[in-house]
Amino acid sequence: MCATCGCGDTSHSHNHTHSHDHSHGHNPSHANVVDVERDILHENNLLAQRNRGYSDAKNILALNLVSSPGSGKTTLLERTLTDLKKEIKFYVIEGDQQTSNDADRIHATGTKVTQINTGKGCHLDAHMILHAVQGIKPEEDSVMFIENVGNLVCPAMFDLGEKERVVVMSVTEGEDKPLKYCDMFHTSTVCVINKIDLLPYVPFNLQKAKEYALQVNPKLEIIEVSCTSGEGLDKWYSWLKAKIPATVS
Image (cartoon, rainbow, N blue to C red; front, side, top):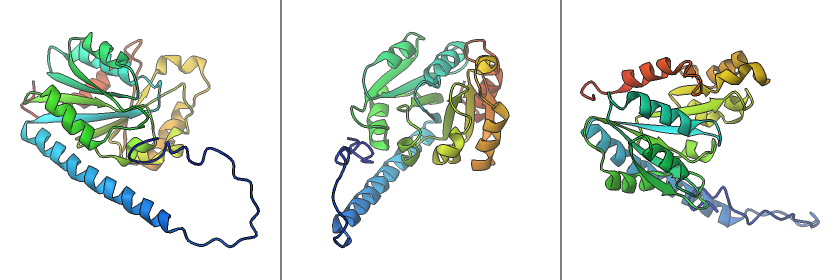
């Protein structure tokens, strides 16, 4: 069960078989759940503002990378860190339910990284990031990537204190992802469409995907890339560099 948003609550995993001859009164516990959720999000937002203030004070560009599992977030990070490490000081916070596999991959690029395992939790939150930042101690004038847990639902609710939210989708997913998970696309600044080298081999309508994304968020920037061939990565790097504060180098 997710400890905060409750999306993994298994209390209703079984089927209920009963008649509906009785009346349905309002369950007061429902109001309590709503109040608790509101309190959790309020507390999270306060901590997110604290994280954001810390990053702003130290001139750190914090980016929250979100996607469904398998979209290629980690591979995009690997390419970015490898190609730009001579120009930019990077730090990475890795979020996964289990293992340090992705953190190990990032460490292999020579980048300082810390791992957060959420267990049954389905997303990172601002409190986790607060402690991770205290541990990783990013230097001033740097870029800090936060790779969120692979999930397009719950991470959309939780502000981590990032400067920008980057949503990654791949051509191996349905082009209607932006419509199905509109909150995530609506709250993101840029959408990276990954694995475009596979377009000739999969039934993915790239134009429709972009139309759907812009339907949800007309201000969304869209960048098409292949981390395998390198196609489009120059546009991603240009976007990243344009977001970096002037003194970061």
